[in-house]
Length: 363
Image (cartoon, rainbow, N blue to C red; front, side):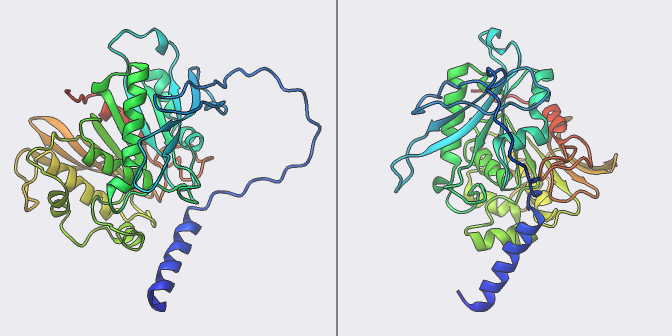
């Protein structure tokens, strides 16, 4: 690689790392080890179908009363790989075991770089919301062996990304626990939002709706170098053209989408959110191949320090884009004690759930 391009790339990585660096841990002093108490909130997971072995879960998010389990799923191997294990955490609200045959909804959450299933659950407070609303939560977790910073591979060939493994995991978990296949929802932040876009576009029969927070536009990045450029500047190509090049829009079943973005995000530019809105309006056939409004209407308005652009068809909200004023690269209305979460702005998890709960996928 020429020296000039190399230095630009390294400066970009340095900026991204500095902006998203987790807070340093406090130093601890040695202390006497007390006898271990019997486990209470920690559970041993049964492996999902295809999983080789279950292991003991870590402590579930504070303030929750359901069942938190940790395990891993053995997905079909990718080309050049003998095994394809995907770690995950699963949270079921109190009383989920006594639910009727129809089952309860499932929300799949994809963390961002330098996050874990635990930190993402704590930062979004998704499990507390699950207790109140009565849905289960599945949190796939990227391995450090796959990426040193736990970033998902959202760019390039989707077949070589983690998308097939996540799809396999969701199918196994829904089948094993009897969750409602018509109410499986997907959400993610940053690289997790990038992978969520891939899953929503490539596996639309699996999910009823998608929530994207601080995510890059779909289909524009083909390499790590171009991914950095897309995050900072979005796509130079028309976003609807990217969708049309990747999918058969006429045969696509549609995908309601709620998109949340920080106004002053220095990692993923807010123009990505605008372009994602156009892309999901296209796959829901609200826009034509030139990006012009075909049916329905676009409602632009401001409320509580959030700029909204709603794509509405026959009075039904199909795609919503929310830009939160003063918010950087962080989950809106989250727990600020966790990296990449901010108390600024509305509660993005509650906002997404209010959007999700009105959507179903017919099978």
